[in-house]
Amino acid sequence: MAAKSKVTDVFARYTRADTTSKQRIFANSDGEVGSGKSTFWLGAPGPIVVQTLDLGLEGVVEQHAGSKEIYMATYDLGQEPGGEFTVALAQQARDKFIEDFEHAIQNARTIVWDRESDMWPLFFFAEFGTDDAFGAAPPKDWDRLKGKLRRLIQMAKTTDVNFGIIRGMKNEWVQKINAKTGAKAATQSGGRVPSGMDDIDALTHLNLTHTRSGKDFSIHIGKARGPGGHEIQDQTFSGLCFADFAQLVFPDSNPSDWE
Image (tube, rainbow, N blue to C red; front, side, top):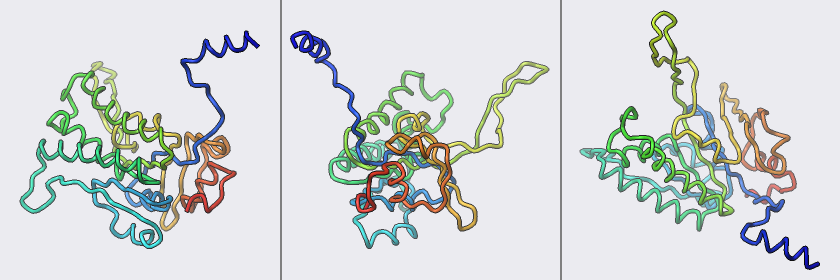
């Protein structure tokens, strides 16, 4: 008995891992415009706080707002007539975004960033005073900026909140080498990749890609953590609402858990 106590004391500085999982959805949602990302997340349990930079919920939020509490956090980006998007305004918007997020994780049941691909350039402009990504800052400053966003995401992980990070898409650029001259040049690959800060998919528990073909909406599930995660990763599902998806991730949950 004494020996067991001694072993326990040796590891007292650490937190012992357990098998419990927080019953919440913590995911990034990537996809083209109109692929159903916002609609999917507005189906999550309320109260929902949507931090929006593109004011893009009109025509989408109406079908959900009557059945649950949905709150929008918006930001002054100089969009009023005669306004101008200045560094000072960007810094104010960034600081308010962070304040709203820290408040939301203490009070909301679901938080949605709509869209992180708009949030990233806002934080970039506020940090460096330019939207030129080439040579704007040395690597250590880039790391500091990314650290600010990682802090927010990790902060949400300490809570039970559902968290959705919506990202748009952009053209993919790749570097090619001229076989004759050896010169390097960037060119478009013809593919599309998520926009915003890189490494987002490494920070979330689930990676979702939303697509639309006509009136049919689908979700491809990449990385999937959770009790049912291994069963659904690398699969594509059509017509999934948030509650149906959540029950795939947590098979022992009920529809009422996601209302």
